[in-house]
Length: 110
Image 1: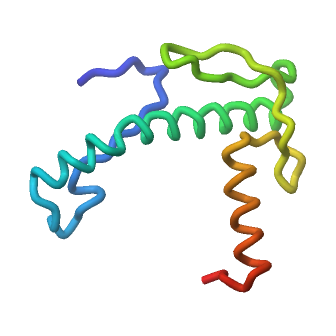
Image 2 (image 1 turned 180 degrees about the vertical axis):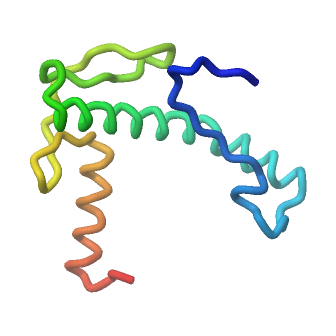
């Protein structure tokens, strides 16, 4: 597989996630079937967040962020959520942060 040089791309082989080779080939395929789409969506979202933060930190561009339409990216409005440093974050990131804060408040922190 050859990728363009200007590509941010990540893949994980079975050996990366199952180093002790505990899953059968059928189990690995079931894992791929269940999680491949989510992995793609989450890495795309993370890449967009990282790019947006990079642009803010380096004072590049306007106040827009990229949003995937499934086939590419389009500009969407500025996020209403920010991290502790004031950087825009996605609604999913805010939900994860809220969940973690709830666990800490309830004493469920590991």
